[in-house]
Length: 132
Image (cartoon, rainbow, N blue to C red; front, side, top):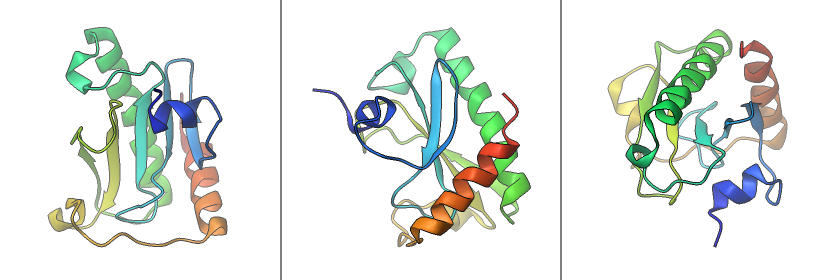
């Protein structure tokens, strides 16, 4: 059975797409820790990030770096935090979270609720700044 991320990649489930190329995709988290919280996934479904081959893992990190740089241009924050937990969805993914302090990265923090318009704006503005 395809993961929820594979279903998003295939267009079966809508998302707020930030960027994509032939191997990777970035989209806003539907339950963000902070506005702009973005997920980066490989298009090829692999459960555990360290099961990706070296080229795919390096490519995913480079893609994530480009998305993070774009996020920093759009969202006021000190840094873009990076987390790989790997238990929430059986599809390798990287969390990119705008942070002002370390505690902003805790996945146990309350999630923020954003309007459809705000999510669309963030996805559009971040995406416009991604340099692939």
